[in-house]
Image 1 (cartoon, rainbow, N blue to C red):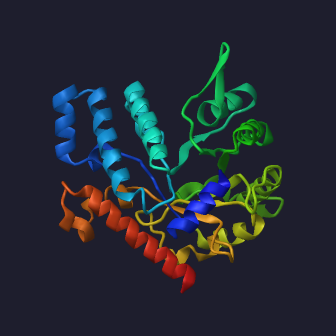
Image 2 (image 1 turned 180 degrees about the vertical axis):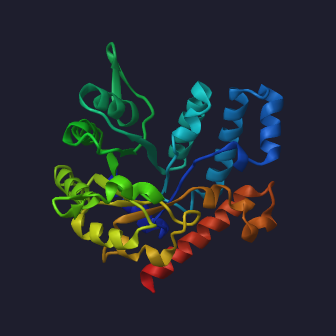
Length: 307
């Protein structure tokens, strides 16, 4: 799967992942109105609105990008109906040929970690049959439990030819409360980065490991250091756009081959029509606004990489 991601990045010339993180405040009124007319102002109605919103975004950007990253919490808040919309979104993205990164940030130990890995990346046995649950291609994972938490994910990934992105240095302002703490004279995120590189050596693709890392665009100097520590890890880079990251900040996250990183933007794309620069599209054409935002993001990153 890491080779598929790399190939699609090369084909699209867009190291971009669109975060499908829908909130009702992002969804145009004509969509919510129709959903509520059919299902009422219910969890089912909200889930229908989310699905219709996602579908139109996907239809307008799938040919420009290699991957999407649905954040499961945005669906879980609507309970079982939201999870159905999550799964429906995953399946539709795969139909469109997109690589799917499940932003689930799971992590535990033993059988619990294995169950998370099986549910999202593997296959669960039911009698004489087996089924893929959510069936993402990659998942984000919290490393707090150490090797005991990571090994079940890596084992399932090896069986299914799938991958993970481990949280190393996240983009939020308070990440440093723990991640920047000094341990043995070094910041903790560097030690986690070394473990990612170590785990990655256990499961390599042609040039890059199936074990990647999450490093925020808001910390470019730390990204430069971590790129050297994890030369064979793909880096998933959140924090572009709405959180302040720009193309010029991202160069150090990539290797000299122009690969090795994929940059996420969520509300900067899916809610682009709410920004002044894309206001001309209006609510009805929110999909076109999202496409324009992807094109601008792609040009910004590519220009920075080749400038």
